[in-house]
Length: 178
View: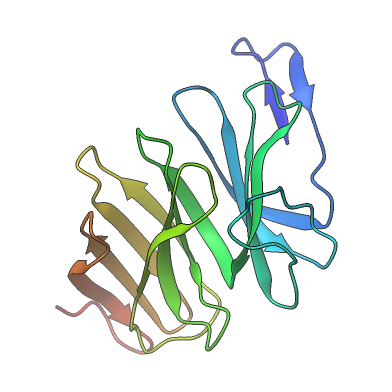
């Protein structure tokens, strides 16, 4: 992880997160970066983390302090995260695949990274590697878009973690459908 000044002329800080491969980053209003990605055995977690001890097919969520000098929290996650956003209260929202069956899911964790607030599994009839993005609005609705080799979709998840709307944009071998 590296931070460069706004003039793009100097390195503010650079650090290394061992046993990991980051796939996405988000930064909250306080300038604290959050990373998600794939983790391996030996990945550093913090005391009180939601899940310690990363194993096979594990993901991670790590929040750094704004100086980049320390981990605010670091946790293993089930499955493989693809995208992250953070709401105004500091709660991270992660789009990824579940550890079992590889189904896409959205996870909301609390601001300390110690508990999952909700997990909304998305029944997309697809368990192939995916890419995508996630954004959270001021009311706490999470909007996720994702694509795999089989289909593309967009969803809205309400603040309680319930799937509010879902639309398949395209499937393998077809054009867009409603």
